[in-house]
Length: 470
Image 1 (cartoon, rainbow, N blue to C red):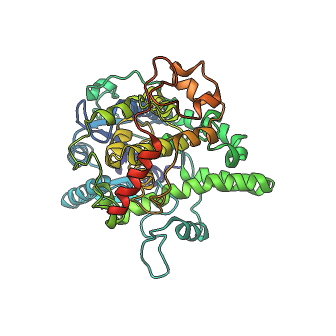
Image 2 (tube, rainbow, N blue to C red):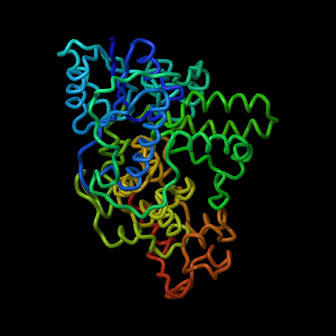
């Protein structure tokens, strides 16, 4: 019988899965496989919360495939070696997979392509993670965009791919040996993080909840962290639990039926999806942003805690930021939300990132790495883009002189202090106005809570001086 391998990576669903559908359509039997990495305990780009979410997604995927007559095969090790072994075991004549937007995934795809050529097996990479990828959105002269707004205009003009069918039936050879589904112990990890529910069914519920109401108020409430009016789909897009094609189609259908205010709000949320694809675009064309600043004239900045890849930050100030003990309530609330849930509201992500890079003048790569090891939704391209934006070193970055004041940001986005009190229990008895202004010199804002690490006005002046001297 004709056998193909579908290599699951970050497309952990059976609904509208481009590569899986193609494999099923072209072959009598399909071997769905996920290859586990072998790193243990510590990784610069991954941590327990995201791995726990992955475990839940794989368990959900395995049940969904079984319901369609198939099996999820789990293997371990370098993907090219694991896939070669599986080809020899099954006699597969083709491998299907969804292309990865980051350079590490692309490097493995190249190794797999070399391997299958040696074996005489065909390889079929498919577009799945983005509505438009690689070289689809370019300037009039055929070069990559470096600024978001013209990219977004060009993106919106392109015809969008339509969503496809959900897998109806699957046949997997029964004799193939599989490892057990992974747990955190697979990587030597433990976690006390309260993560969001994993799996395709949970993701679809989140999408339905958002489109049933919150999307219509997204434009006005998205920056209010206590409102919880964001979609909470970022981890679902990261792991491919939902099809970007379906999401876009459902949003555009809602916009057609909605009034002017609703269409505007939906458009603002779609704009966030375009930002996601813009950061994929930037990483695809300039992968060096993972090692240094996108803006070459920022690479000589004299950060207080500079490092090279492979060396992590260990300074006391950085550790206080990580622990949510900076003495700035909105910053500490965000960092503690991250520690407890593997998630942080996007507005607060900007506040804490700018605090690290501007108030403390600590290199953005420290924060980027910390987020990647803590976020359930950690996406290399978007995380890098967001950190470089806050640090004023990236594409479309905030101007270096536009430095957010954590106190005024609190007054604007958490004026009643509800978000802060939720995550910083030491401050639960303080009123909103008390949380929107710094305490007097040498005075704690509350008993048992640390003094502010820095004076924001003085720190702002030092940051401006650093950028001007660059």
